Amino acid sequence: MTSAILPTYTRYPLAFESGEGAWLTSTTGEKYLDFGGGIAVSSLGYTHPHLVEALNRQAQKIWHTSNLFQIPQGEAFASRLTAATFADFAFFTNSGAEALELTIKMARKWNYVNGAPERFRILTFEGAFHGRTLATIAAGGNAKYLEGFGPRVDGFDQVPFGDIDAARAAIGPATGAILVEPVQGEGGIRVGSNPFIRGLREICDDKKLLLIFDEVQCGMGRTGKLFAYELYGVAPDILATAKGIGGGFPLGAVLCSAEAGKGMVAGTHGTTYGGNPLAMACGAAVLDILLAPGFFDEVARKGLVLRQSLAALAASHASVIAEIRGEGLMQGLRLRVPNGEFAAAARAEKLIVIPAADNVVRILPPLIVGDEEIREGARRLEAACRHFEIASPEKLQGAGG
Ligand SMILES: *Cc1c(COP(=O)(O)O)cnc(C)c1O
Image (cartoon, rainbow, N blue to C red; front, side, top):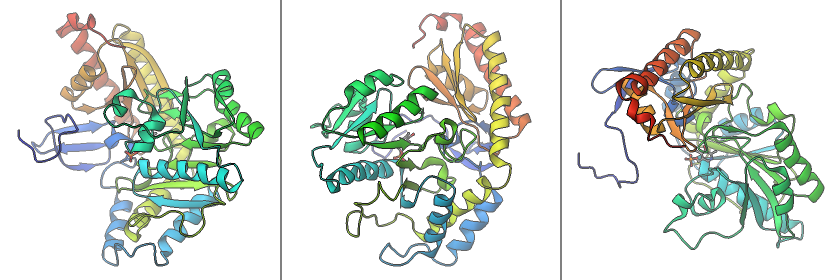
């Protein structure tokens, strides 16, 4: 098929026309169970009545006014987010990368206003993903994403994820912040250990550095908490989130303490669309659902149901599944067969899962998924496993990872 879209994606020959809850309907009328959520974005599933109602209501009033004016919907949404978190301030963006760009600018500015402009370097971790802008590909350090886009934005040093001693050793006189995903998403659902994440907080306190959490993927309820930092009992100074926050409407946010944000005075940063009334209506509607009493307990409980199903699957299909890892409804299967082929086998069973690095497929059901849908997903994963065991055992040979 010829396409007028710049071909930076290898797309599956599949398009969807509609969706409801955890289910998608393709343009050819086939129903798929969606454990990908458009990469952890459609976290309340499709056509959630509360979200549709909120968007329609706002669409009939006003979509956009710009940040030159007061945006009451944004004021209210920011107040609710800060009340529910460590943060004193929120800034709204249109994407995850845009949020990450701001966290990087904030770290530099904070050191600058503290009289230490030389402390512009940020420590990041192998396997990280922070976006596709020039600064965020430098922060992520993935050679594949950097190639051909030099010169590389300066100011990022990288050590292995999980290695607290390496992190401590890498702090130099020019280091001003540490940036980490508490749970790596694109890196293959790697959950930061308690000693690692808490250790980073200690390093930042010792050395007077800012701790930045990238919760673009693991935030907004995915792990069974509003934000994953709650799992560790330590708060960052700055947090970036996006993906699930708008329930499918493009939206991101940076949350920060008053201290971390102190250099960000009028004129230091901007965005034309960010936080417009339509986006704020969608974000507020998502938050209504997330903050309803008992919602996160349900996510955590369903995370355990999913985890148990996956454990049973791994036990009976050890030639396909090497390891299960994750938290809440953010789970990964590290495979002994190529993950892209496994995701294709799952699609053949009408189940969407998403490949990640380290030969993992990500299992990211909507947070409103039902127990029976989880069991149905597990049955389809089992059927996908059998593609490799029965139909083509030779595929087990060429396994990656
Ligand atoms: C997806 C992602 C980003 C980038 O978000 P975009 O909206 O694609 O710019 C950044 N960090 C993490 C952890 C992500 O998963």
